Image 1: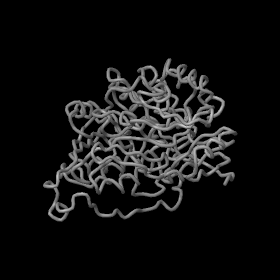
Image 2 (image 1 turned 30 degrees about the vertical axis):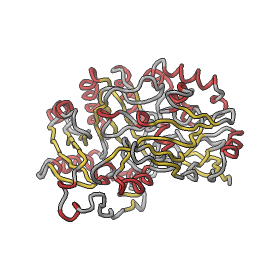
Image 3 (image 1 turned 45 degrees about the vertical axis):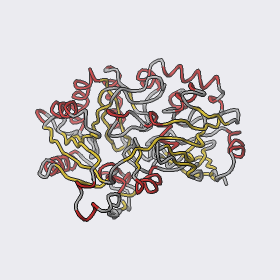
Length: 448
């Protein structure tokens, strides 16, 4: 069934009317027929900007969400690309298995995880999602389905991981889950009085399985970049309280809340943000600094608030996420944080993470070894100007911006951040005919 629908990314900006066709769980041949008009695939719509929107035709792939096979010795899961991480966790965590890599929401499909080469709190240890993909089946521009891996169709395999859906439509994904001892995380909080202390905490704890920091992006002076660094380890059953020790994979159901309306624009200002950030840092710095919490609270704190994107009002917001090489990270981040604090356009949800080595063989994969800063800006002309200024710092430091979060980056900035890999990606798209078949608002904006 095809209908015209107003679509938006998770940031709710931009909004476009798109012709949307829902793909039922039918054959690849019928799927191929839908490609005649050209299209982009769309899953849960959790990319923040315009990566999964194409007005001529957007294919809703959520109907393809069947599990196909699971090997309980190796952890290899084979499933259709519309399966979500939430469905994987619900099915396999009770059996002792968990996604090896997960972003900050479980409401993302396998296809989206591959197309965005998503990363998590353990990138410094295990890399991004694509590092744990064994193979996938890709519907290509010629209507044929190709199995892609490091041994077969390797160039297509590498370009599709992080390729934003622009090489073809993912049908089936085979990826590795990891064995875990419980559904609980032992979390340790390290308060850091400024950016230097936060970086020192990350570097001193590179052996931690998970690490992430909430960062106060409005603090200045000696407190510039003050943070709460959260380390995490999978808890053993004996570390749990008596109530949960006998069933370590059972967690209490979280009472979900819903943001029922768009917050008024005046509610987000430098005074409310400063007050919130000061309170959050004070509360997070208070004992106990080590506790055992369930996986949902550690990995997906915002998933408990349905439609939390309404917090930024009807105009929407842009999430700005940048990666800075290790050697330039401290100075570039300090410059960016000072600029953000001066502007007063800070974020409730600023996050700092340490990246391990990236994957340069994947042309559009985002992570590079160093630090990544992610924060939200309510959409406004002042915010757009600020993000352009942040782009200049990022590019000067040899960094780049994450495509799956972006909604406004210029083609010039994109090419400066991703370098010669952009030309290689364009050439592959041309060689396989994907440039004439697969497109999105993002690909048009960035000249892909």
